[in-house]
Amino acid sequence: MAEHLNRSLRAAPRWRRQPKQRPRALMNAALRLLKRHGYRKIRVEDVAEAAGLSKTAVYHYFPNKDELLRQTLATRIAERTAEIERLLESAGGPPSKRLRKFLRHFWDMSLTSQSGLWQRLLITELAADAPELFEIWAQGLVDRWTLVEALIKEGQTRGEFRRDVDAPVAARLIVSGLAHQALFHVHLGVSRLAPCDPDHLFETAVDHLFQTLRARGR
Image (cartoon, rainbow, N blue to C red; front, top):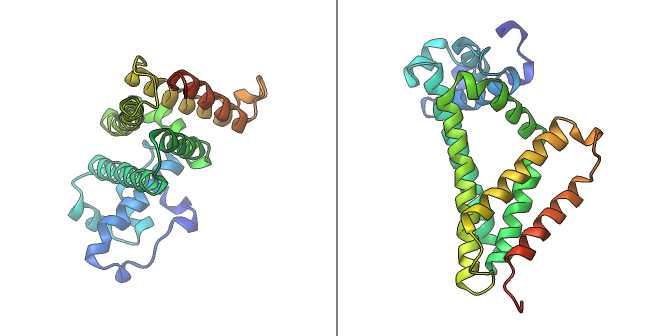
């Protein structure tokens, strides 16, 4: 496999890699290869070559392939979570504004080709062959549910949303619904059988959510 790696995946020569840069270089290379070739085909030597390091260097920082991938995925999810927190902090305003901002961000990210590759990988390989990696991803999804739930509850406390709405269920339905529509409608091509403009799909789904949430008189 190493001979067939795309040249764009090859990193700088190994002598340019400072020790403190090596774990990050290996994780970046592992993530690129995981998305491109899948879990089953990744070998430690391929990750080392893509990072511009030796196979020995990989084992210096990570005991095996699975631990390398586990730390890679956990780090990436933590970074995405931090990005979302910064996004919501910069948005400011009432819970409804921040909730809509997050859902738009989540939808736009779900529509990217990289997200499509990742979703296919989850279904075809990780869920069956790498349950520990799948669980890390699943925890990231649960964190998104929790974030939306917290925004709904904040809106309920402030009188912006109805208090009788089940916040945990509403959060699950909107996040999972958008994720599955992105996967099936866009990435798996179901739109060919049932056309629907993605932007219209998003706006209508979110409008229905807010109609359900909105407190009377607002």
